[in-house]
Amino acid sequence: MNKMENNSAFWQGDSHRWTLSYCGKYLMTLALGLVYKLIFKFFARKPRNTKFGLVLCAIFKNEAPYLKEWIEYHLLVGVEHFYLYNNNSTDHFREVLQPYVDNGTVTLTEWPETPGQITAYKHWYENYREETTWCSFLDLDEFFVPYKHTNLQDWLQRFKNYPLVLVYWKMFGTSGRLEHDENQLQIEQYTNCWPNLVSRGKLFYNTNYDIGYFKVDMMHYFLCRYGRLKVPPINQFGKFVVWEVHRMKKKADIQCNHYWSRAYGNYEKKHQRGSACWGKSWKTFDKFLQYEHRNTSSDHKIHRFLVELKLKMTGLSPEK
Image (cartoon, rainbow, N blue to C red; front, side, top):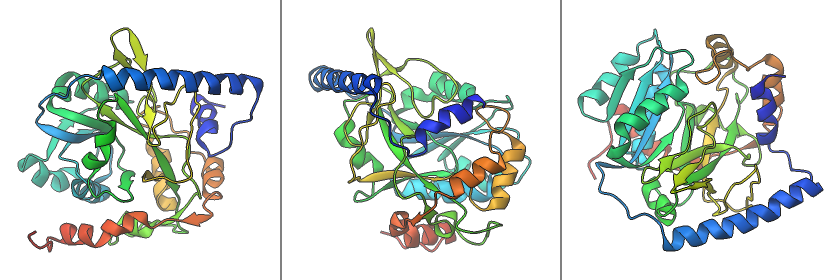
């Protein structure tokens, strides 16, 4: 079993066993969470004036068919700028991105390193961090979906004192498709999903605090420095996540849609091109079936933005 397969066991939606060791971790998490909340209630750093309120940073390879939808959707929900790293793409990505580069929405960087994901994030941190208040290291198959708010920056307001906020994944599969229909948006094609949020997701990073380390898989979990203190993420339910203890509630107000496979043909292509994070792909057919068989539900929450997105994508959006 490789490292990714071993790590993946903890985010497949399975409940932790209430062993003596886990009970001890749970109690310590409660205590540490209280301490962290007191610290950031009374001693949080004051906000800085920045060029942007919220940006996304992503590395991509041969994902031209999905770039426009991903950018336009996140513009709708409050993202102001995108730092994109091209990792040896051979498709028509430049044609798609050039209008966004020209109007200042996208900063495009060539990044040929393999694997190059974490080094790209570090490059962003060293060169662009001061330009924004919040950043998320997101992939092109991930979409933040607020349930009630229409602007992610409004949703983030209640977490403004904290260094990191974790939003959990909702896993979406193939919806029975062998091939992706490039004439239809992916958020419309894929609605079949796992029934519950899983205990892995993506982070909103508050640039007022220093990132504690850069390592493989850091896009899902890392620590920030506050003086000598190393601070873990607080999750979307207001609970600090320590030692893989995820305290989640049934009622959520946001999720991160993870279209982990799209159609089966897309899944095969992902496997062939490898991982931007790990290099060699861990996406075997057995792993595909393991995830696909969990798609026992459907989710349409993102569809409340669908008409608006289609109008934006086709250039028919009326002036507000």
